[in-house]
Amino acid sequence: MSFRTISVIGLGYIGLPTAAAFASRQQHVVGIDINAHAVETINRGEIHIVEPDLDTVVKQAVQQGFLRAATQPVAADAFLIAVPTPFKGDHQPDMTYVQAAALSLAPVLKPGDLVILESTSPVGATEQMADWLAEARPDLSFPQQQPNSPDIHIAYCPERVLPGQVMVELIKNDRVIGGMTPACSERASELYRIFLEGECVVTNARTAEMCKLTENSFRDVNIAFANELSLICAQQGINVWELIALANRHPRVNILQPGPGVGGHCIAVDPWFIVAQNPELARLIRTAREVNDAKPHWVLDQVKAAVADCLSESGKRASELTIACFGLAFKPNIDDLRESPAMEVAHLVASWHSGTTWVVEPNVQQIPAVLASEATLVTLDQALTQADVLVMLVDHHAFKAVSGEQVSQRWVVDTKGVWR
Image 1 (cartoon, rainbow, N blue to C red):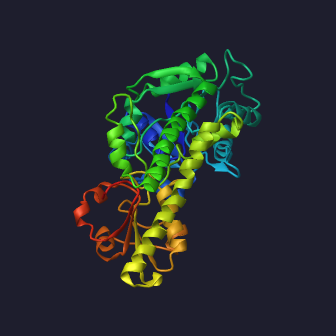
Image 2: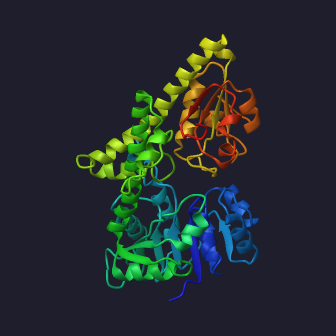
Image 3: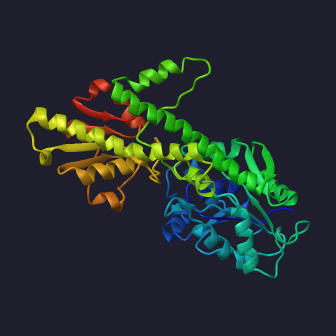
């Protein structure tokens, strides 16, 4: 059975590239988003996010009539939900956006349709979504009610792509397909094979959900080791980057690089989903999260120490000093600020510092409102030539192009080892 129309609910950093990937294979795709600005931008053949090569694919798909965007769901043969799943309160998963997306598409469902949840979710989320749909559409049958031949097939198929390389990895990487039944898995595999060059690896929905959480928790634990090592090295007077480079010469050691923390919509969030459901067992995963979440406050302490030294040697008052924070994104060379430790550090610095705080972020046109009242967006050259204290937070290409010899300031807090 072919897919005449594919609908992607949520046109953010994952949803829009996914919609574009299907449309590039001459599939008719309708993207849905509650953000009217994003919808208008896409319908002009433009994009509202920064992702290499995405603009070209979207422009061509829109011009050829294979991609359009709307604010309300329309009838389709396959629906992919790619909305945020943040946490709330004490790091509890917030499924509000998934529930809203499911209920919004429920009225247009018809027998034979496929619904796929792509959003990173706690174990059992796909089954919960199926229950929401079944309650909203009692006239249709779902896998939990009629496993052998439901009217609606449902699966969980998480993305596993790297921001900045999404358009390549979306197509090349293997895809985990977690259907609620084998037939659901096969139907979902049929959909992804439209553009996927990697392998469709089939499992059940709960295992697929846990697989996504496991991948990001593994990375979080390893980053926590590097971040904790950086704290120890700072106290011992050891260059952590030199140490890691030496240790990594061991054939079975591969330590990651430390930074100001861990950010993004996945690694900084997903481990908490495991902890929330398994609080007594997920001890290592919880500790890793706590180590990484505490790193921005440690960076602030390093900034305070640098400012104290600067005041002591320069004779200036604190209100006369300018601190420049380099980078706001959660990783290099993108504009995504979600769960960014660099954003947190900049906010902590600006809230504490009585003088001027500048931020340099070449990938955004303006800084978020939460920071705009405390800091000013300036150019790289202005920060390098006029700031008193420099705080390196994100190793963007533009920052790495500046050699350490070009940095004249004596007071530098470099969390990425760019100017060491």
